[in-house]
Length: 250
Image 1: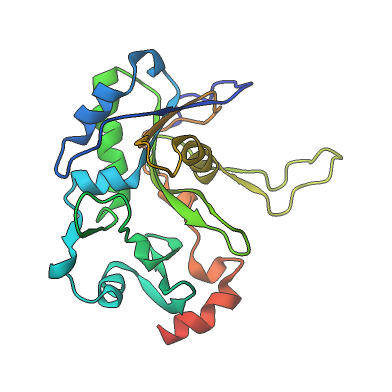
Image 2 (image 1 turned 45 degrees about the vertical axis):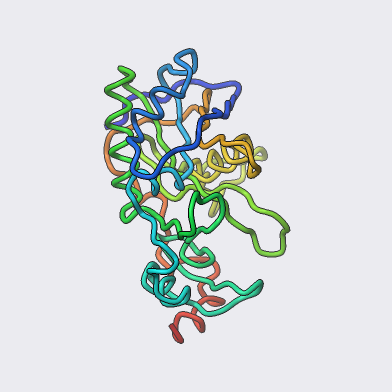
């Protein structure tokens, strides 16, 4: 059941600089220690880079113990779509169209690959439960973020790998636009919009800012699993006609 949908006039985001997170560390303890108490209040959204979630869950693999990079990517994805530019591969992993199943080699403290969490939604739910109890909050949103490329655009933006605690989308189909005409297709994607904002604040450089706190979102906070309201089946996706030949070969 929905808990609340507070009114909002301004959104604020605060990235949190932290010490480096160690492999196997307790993530909820780390976050509760590092997020200033002044930022903790009802209706907040906490964005957490998925990399430290993976480190907490020991989702790493030493390169000298790994299969070939392509075999590893195939193991970690749902669909392997082939080799693309810049000597990488294109895949579908955890419902995202993303290079190399999200496997990361940057900012690793050793010669290893960092893999996505096995179940990103279970990871987000667990973190939501632990932090909600620690902070004594009723309404809390959690987003696990990653960087993502956009076709025909340079650079990366943020995307939500998973989330918990709020309605991920808002359906405007049938509602009137500014001129009274009904929207035909429009839905607002809160998860990726907030992930993009948070990742922009966290930065992609050398300063460790793996957390960001967002206030003023006007989200509808819930306790139940809402992932089905965000994910799009491949066959229904706008770009399926482009992807289908690649899927047929995978």
